[in-house]
Length: 205
Image 1 (tube, helix red, strand yellow):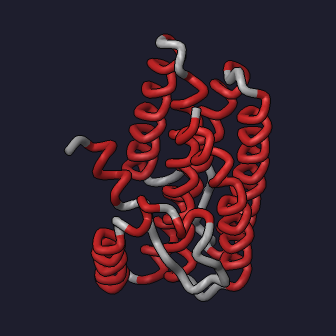
Image 2 (cartoon, helix red, strand yellow):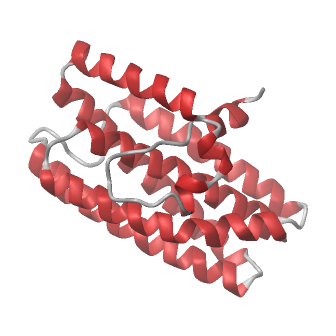
């Protein structure tokens, strides 16, 4: 099993937001990853007790923000090369959702975490986000060269939606801050609405 397959197996998560079992939560990749998610959440809970819930929540929020920002960079780079007008439209909607989430997260995080300064995050968190961006960029670059960008782009964006939604669910469950919960819930709902447009495209084209 390579690194990409392992990541794919831990992207599913359920959370106490008001959601149906359609969309993201209804996809097979989420159902098969229940055990992995439970273990992930248990590790996160243990880590929060060891390091302090405030620090744990802050790092989760920063990791989410960094990942979203780097996903936005990749979308900006490859969206103009997507041939399908339908897929480009879905991509533009995804870019808008993630842009709004990034902006709102920044505003809430600077309010909650007084020592948080955008651009001065923990180098370890930055390095992780950079590696994730490089992997995504490399996959799309290869797909573009091989003339299969649309299919791979749809697949990768469906995966990114699943991953970001999982990160949002974990952060939602670890915070009691209503402003942050509102941002996460709004973003999660919007991503859930967009998921099928990418997943269905990658499965049928």
